[in-house]
Image (cartoon, rainbow over all chains, first blue to last red; front, side, top):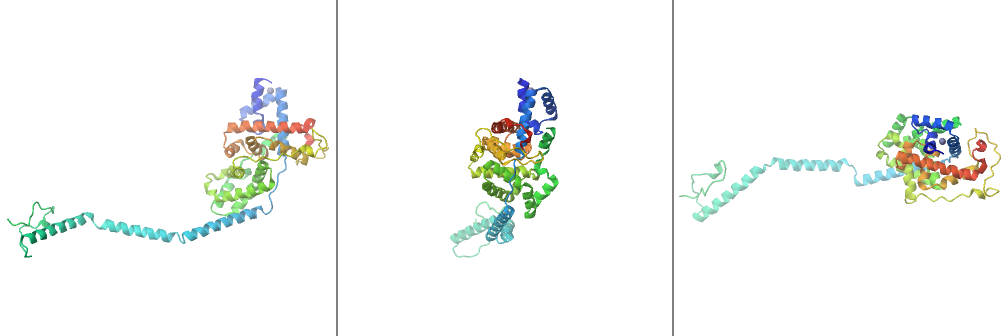
Length: 165
Length: 215
Ligand SMILES: [Zn+2]
């Protein structure tokens, strides 16, 4: 057996299975015509291949499909039951959650945070003003002041605007 | 000889020879929950899967159970099948995994069938005078045992590719997808498996090996 024979022998199974590229098939077939040992090996492999190919196939039980179908249906019903149990109607919780998110978003969106902090600042100024006035006059009398801090554009009076000179 | 060769090669059709469009439609219907479509797929592939598992496990009862498991699992996981045309190799892979899982990652050790028990003399089996013509392609029970024994004695990785190539007649590409090995490795393993089985059969048949009236 030559080196060439060894290489070709490795491909004999692929040759009989029709799994070789056309060029290789041509080359090996040509070799088989002139090489008795490779040809004998090929025939020998082909004989057992045909023998094995004729092995009897077994048939499944007639009820096999019914069993499979029942198992599939049972599994499907079980899955459906669990889903219904956990989420009676999936769109109810989804809708409710969506509405909640929308409401929360609009509340936060429509209360301007800038105004909120301005209101707090004004309240603080007013409280200081009342405290200061009470400390100075103590009588609760209303005093006219020249300067109204709440009308100022930047709303942050410098110094105490309520103190009379 | 040429005719037999031709028959051998022409049997090697992917996906049961079913029209790919028809297969695609059936798998799509099954994916949307159509059990009737899935029953058609069972009709096409049930026997193949059963026989594949049977040759791997050597047990008919086990093969029935695992075949049923394979189809139930396949229906449940159909959405994970990306290419519908690869349904056959996907199914074989599920079947193979079911066998592996059952035997915890190891292929079952098949009890050896002693072919000599039923023969009259030791050594070589005496085959009954062949009354069957070449058109009768079913092996004699004796020969069937010899072939099964030869398959059983194959190492794990050879047994898989041998059954898929010589019995199921799948293409090397499909076999490579099923067993998850490269095409080159599959090609080489198939050849070695065939040589081993041939040698075993030759050993049992002795001088009768190569006689065309054996089957
Ligand atoms: Zn040669």
